[in-house]
Length: 374
Image (cartoon, rainbow, N blue to C red):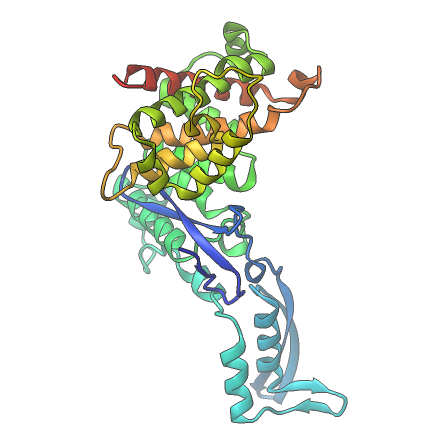
């Protein structure tokens, strides 16, 4: 059910759940059209903050003006900070002081200002720095690293900000920090899951995901060696693997929903769209399965198995989250090349994308083929 974005940007959003094997769940904010919510109140760059500092010394009082960079998460917050700095609003006659009611109105109408809280929710460790704590920082114990992981998870829960880097200081997204921390604990499945989530957000994680997959599976061969071994081209990936993943996923959904009325009840919007396409189809193409499931989009199939995995009343427990995340990756790669007929397509697709697309496709196909009814 959509809710209003809590920053006060007035947009309606919903949060898609992305569970991890240790019980942590990331809530990805999405707009009503399914795109990721890039909140306007969380995208304002830092500004120059003018401060007047009074010094009292032997030579008497002095006032020094200092410019300081202050992060602001929204134009309203920046405006509010300016008024606070000047104890009023700039006008033609100088500074106009605000009444108590005007201050209250300004405070009530400004969006929630989370930047300071966001920046301060970080694991500080021990307050007293000793030789032992310095040693701990250089070679952190597993307990220390798990505390860091817990802190990052807390930041992700409290502030699910897909496009904001940690504190706006080191240009590192919270989800990437999450992945790095899982990796440090050698939980490669969770590290990959976090990177797949970041891939949905910024579309730049394929190389790192493949690196983690190699670590997880103890791959020794280079990407070029794998390309040669698999003899992969982009068109072969599309026809032999990506479409097979789509078909086998539909086959699984079809056999879980032997009675289509239950599917219609669980996913009315997907049913309506697919059924509309089915009714508009012609008799020129003979289909193996002329049912509503056949007309589902690949992306809808991914969402269906994900939602049914977490269904409280009737969960599809045989599906693993690792498979679900792999399907999402294949969906995105398939969509990129589905309608591309360029003969130079192979040159424009990275070898990492090809190898990872193959690895995930093969894993998904093998998984479903081992299920008795898939």
